[in-house]
Amino acid sequence: DAEREAQVEEEEDDDAEFEHSWSPSPFPERVTIIGGGPAGLSAAIYAARSGLKPVVVAPPMGGQLQGKGVDVENYPGLFNVTGPAVISLMRQQAIEFGAKFEAEIVTGIDASSRPLKVMTNSSVIQTHAVIVATGAESKWLDVKGEYEMRGGGVSSCATCDGHMYRGKHVLVVGGGDTAMEDALVLARTSESVTVIHRRDAFRASKVLAQRVMEHPSISIKWNTVLTEIIGKASDAIDATSGDAELDLDAPVQNVVSGAVLKDVYTGEETKMDVDAVFVAIGHTPSTSFLEALVEFNPDHPGYVLTQGTSTRTSVPGIFACGDVADSIYRQAITSAGSGAAAALDAERWLSEEGLGNEEADFEAELLAELMSDGDKQTMYDADAYNVYDDAGGRMTGMKESVAAEL
Image 1 (cartoon, rainbow, N blue to C red):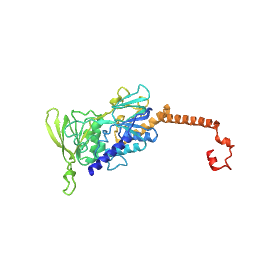
Image 2 (tube, helix red, strand yellow):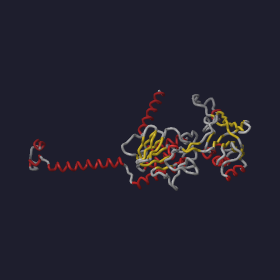
Image 3 (cartoon, rainbow, N blue to C red):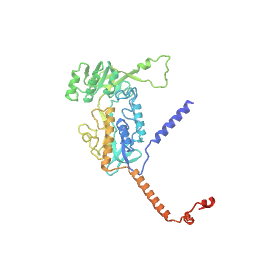
Image 4 (cartoon, one colour):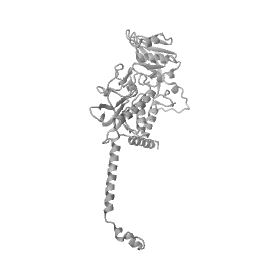
């Protein structure tokens, strides 16, 4: 029956997942990649194709693209595919070339001795090189309706999702450079953009703030905070006809229809009709496990400082890519590109340091030793007693049975 088929399919998925899981080895890994987003998986694909047999350490859930339920439409070559589907394809490609996975959260890196040690909740991975690709998490307001309507009008990326609200009314929350940039991006396609800020002046750069304040399609509400996001059933649900199949067990997808705003001085609340809310109050890089280990960008706290145009950090053998080192672009495609660069940098560094594959070297030495022992045995056998010598080497003219015995 259907229930049994579903159970069998689930068991097969579990077996397939286990098949590509990392298992401890007496030899250090050559490259360990921390993070399973576009940067980490791109690094894994490049490293695996180079024969480095990378280990990817990342929990099965999490990541901005992994949690993006709507279609990803700004990644070349992909159309009508969701964030989780993109990650699944990248993961499968990495597996195809030999990458292994450890579904754990990294708690720290020990660089006091070599090889490096990557600590997780349940394991310690010894490795020559580490690629950090843990990304940066969007900051959220934690107001009512925000979590429930992510992907239904609540977003933290105007570049990613703004096109879906062409000709509509949108709200931007924030007062920094990110909020200004998002407001200007949205103003190109949206009917109107309202920026709300809890203070009476933006903390963004003067040039960006001035452009926002002078833009005809952008209005500003000072000394205002967002207290609630109001939703309604999506038009797709409303338009469902009686003849169409409707899954009554599926959760109803609500979309943004309005927002409740509050004046920070008077406490007065007003309701505003909007089609989308863009939260632009910054990002927090997932780098807490690197504190006191690598240098951070002094101009962008929390972001790892890399050397020049490379992905090398202040610690030899540790590389950083994706949003963890990018405070400007923060796009899936730029993350994927820097992940490829990190794998190339790591491969070059391993070659410069003369760090090869100890496991393969050990197997080669063992095989050479076995072959050497075999040659010695052959020489010994050549000097040993040979029964054919008693027959003078003559085999012809003898009975078959006698020849067989000899």
